[in-house]
Length: 77
Image 1: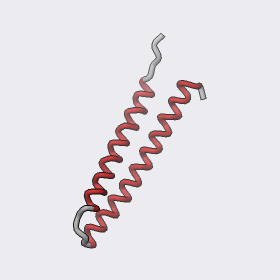
Image 2: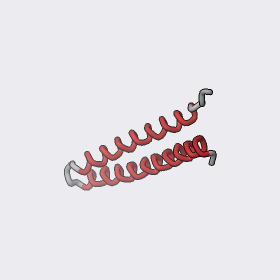
Image 3: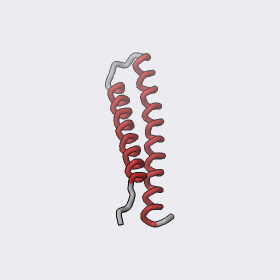
Image 4: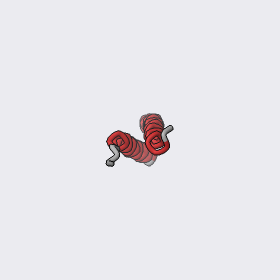
């Protein structure tokens, strides 16, 4: 009997997409940290940090949702 894993696949793909978004945010922050030392650039760098932190929160939430679904599927809880 085939098991329908479409929900798990969807959650896994959402998690992977969130991780890719997080990687991009980290790279953006790193790029701004390598720039000049003007106040405007420091403000952009700080904004990039806040964005990275927000995206990291999405990754953690997506990971938890996927892990919870795996536990339900594999262990019934």
